[in-house]
Image 1 (cartoon, rainbow, N blue to C red):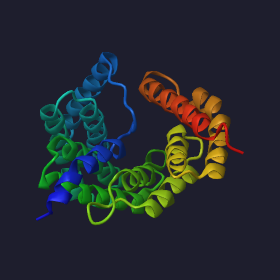
Image 2: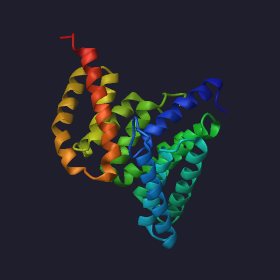
Image 3: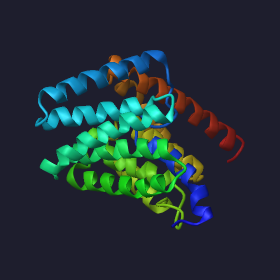
Length: 257
């Protein structure tokens, strides 16, 4: 059983999972419009899955929709309920198709949401390790899934979680996976944002400046390519994070050579 110190670290670990488990990680802005869209997508995906429970595509769609709705939940009861439904469907899929990369990926997403809902608890503590395992399995099967999603989420997990012996956090592993995600899908804004935010925290100025230049270069192209209702929430978050990143960079380095 974990020590008192380990129990005190659970909340921080699970808070990190809220970031790592997201199709839209980071400082998610919860608005009524986005919640309504997530609820509609969840209901539609459930209906589609119920009409063909043997469909891998329908199962994966529901796994994704449940993780997105769980992320927008306003209370832990709702978050846990939605996440558990996603977990059940993903496990059902993996029982039939154990090599389904999306199955493992969305299972990890929903497990992360359940961990957040259950924290602080021994259950949440244990779930973090299961999340890590599922993301690593997804990465081994198809690391390019969801714009390098398995690499991106692993990087965030190692970046945000406390280190040993409290949890799985690791600066070296975080750097490895965040850089890998940025290399796998360099034009995806979140990959570069995550890497830049970590580089700022680690005070890696030269690397950060190179990543900021990449962000400036890809931003207008991504704005053109990633359009429509489905991307509105992501852009709201990304714009906010980019502005904060640049402000922090100026605050820390403006007066330094």
